[in-house]
Amino acid sequence: MIISGKELSARLKAEMAGQVSSFPEKYGRVPHLVVILVGDDPASVSYVTGKAKASQVVGIKNTTIRKPVDISEDELLGLIRELNADDTVDGILVQLPLPEHISEAKVIETISKDKDVDGFHPLNVAALWQKQPCTLPCTPKGIIKMLKTAGVEIKGKRAVVIGRSNIVGLPVAKLLLDENATVTIAHSRTADLPSVTREADILVVAIGRPRFVTADMVKDGAAVIDVGVNRDPETGKLCGDVDFAAIEPKASVITPVPGGVGPMTICCLMENTIECFLNKMTPKKV
Ligand code: NAP
Image (cartoon, rainbow, N blue to C red; front, top):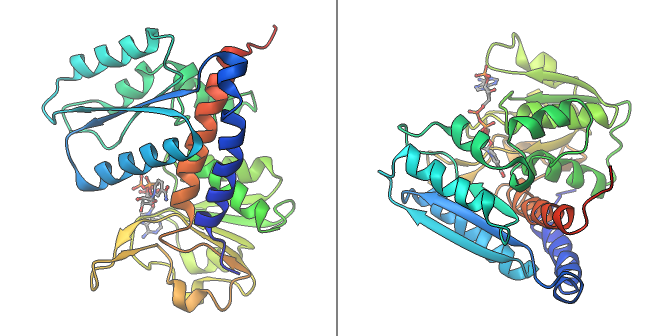
């Protein structure tokens, strides 16, 4: 079975649109997401455009602020601080990657934790690992939703995550652990990777290398989630980290690229923006 992130995200966005349509009456306005794009890298431009389109579908106000590639770090941090102080802004996202002269860590730290719709702020990350309420990072959150929607049992299963980045590999592994899977995290120094991946009931691949995972690395009946977004060196088309054509017949479920994890990431960004808005509008009593 192919898990279509495109279809699932369309369904979830339609549900969110229904929810958001009641906000003007209840709260006087809709959630407001501000996306900052530095420079004009084509991939980043396309991601930012996707976020604006999704906001429109859901009924969220989206402001995209474009800044030149040579904007200074101080100026960018100053802009973020202004948006932190702006009560009409609920979510702030700075599109990564940033030019080398700007510290991504400083940018992520400067965004207020309460407006950190990406779930990258150190306090959100710490809360995730301490099982405290937090904004979950979008891609890992989307992956868990896809597995659950496809009816994949996670509890008690053996999950292998290839990749240990802060934005995908590590948080996916943590969320799978929280769902009571037994989790192995593999990386570039893992010895005999195929022997590790062949043990996986659930295999999540987040490496960034076209068709790196071949059919011999996958157990029969495994659920395979392909996070990678690459250009096929031969055709120039988008492709994932797994050899989809060869693995699809032996997997129980598999995500395609494009149309798999990508749309779910944007869908969860919408959900996170609504959550940040509602946290502000209906603060929990302490
Ligand atoms: P990253 O920070 O570059 O991390 C890549 C990970 O892959 C690292 O942990 C690295 O291991 C591991 N790796 C590299 N070569 C390997 C090998 N030969 N064997 C085993 N592990 C290997 O990348 P990322 O940000 O996590 O992104 C991964 C992919 O997901 C990229 O294609 C990215 O574009 C895509 N992505 C997609 C979405 C989406 O919404 N669909 C969101 C985010 C990212 P070491 O730690 O040992 O170096």
